[in-house]
Length: 519
Image 1: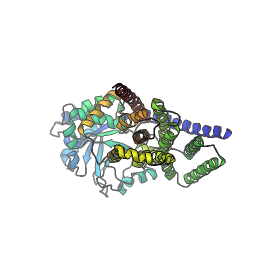
Image 2 (image 1 turned 90 degrees about the vertical axis):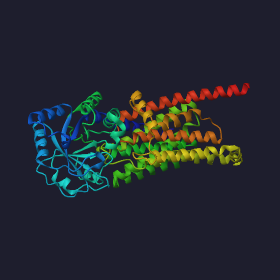
Image 3 (image 1 turned 135 degrees about the vertical axis):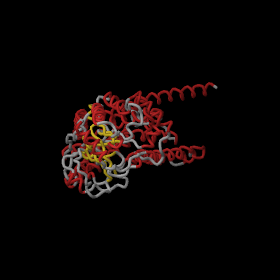
Image 4 (image 1 turned 90 degrees about the horizontal axis):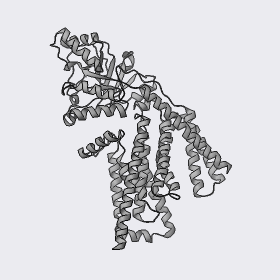
């Protein structure tokens, strides 16, 4: 009994530490709220008189534009060519400096030599289409300028630059020309909003800023409406994690595993000894390479926590109680992973959680293996009989769903999102602020509400889908560039919607069964 109390205490301490780090992250998010816009210098009309040009630039400054960009590389995706540094461009840049605006160089990361321009940039936006390394001149010649990381075009080597001590980063978002054609004004404004609110973007590189009437003005209103401050973003406040946090969370996870084993059988000296060995192994790995240890522990929690939670909870609970209990546990595991990986390199997406696809599919595979292994107690005749009656459709549909989940995961999925699905996502974000994931409220959560304690392939399929929903909850928290408060809100929305849909489907099936018995 004393051993159980000790294990529960260690687990409670790990969850408390995770919530404490989460609160610190929320405070960090609340302090990092300044957003600035950059527009290309070549898009300004230099034929204006000096007074008219200065008035135009002053107006842009008042709307949140902090710099004019000078493109030192060809950028066809943004409908921009290399800037001709003529007297016309220098006239615009001198007027911009007089209006209080800075200068932003946009440079291809393949350019290994520093640009020979008689201007001092306030911001350098590196663009990479080929995973280029960070040019050496960035380290030696950049000075106090900010280094802009253009989302989805990040050069490799940024993490090494961070490890060398560089901290003057800012995340940048831009919308490509063909995307502007498809989105239109309202869609573009919504895209900018989401980038700022959901992905720690603090510089908006607004190319083709004269395409829509009052484009910059409307964008500034939308950003201000989010509660952000328009102006020059500063380098983010340092946020780094420590070895003790890693060790406490690791000990809590090992304690959780031992408690699960104890719930399935008697707590033995062997289980406690394995727990001590596990903690010791984590301690040694962390002292040798803390970054590798954090990544390994985070992946173990993401893969094993949903499976272990379902194994324990389904023996005691079912229906909505099962869903709520397991979802709370998965949220705690997600917060633990977020606490493990909470430092500035993850917030700026210089570093990422590794193993997203494995963490999505492994819990379902583990729960299938566990349940099928238990079926050996009654023999395989029951399973074979169900397959002959057409239940083979269940694993076929499950494999199809698994393939779809894998191919649809990530920022650049192999199967793109259809326009009708984008419209549904937009409406959900308008109504709920944080859009819940389809894998949760349409698939995994209703499946757990419908699940019954029966040894049939359909019920096994529901349990595997339920594990997918729990894996998706954890996946929400491993996106460290998303604010923790938004991840919690997204998870709550998914749980409430999934619970309502599951209860509705359960009521429908009960009504159909009742009607069938009467007929």
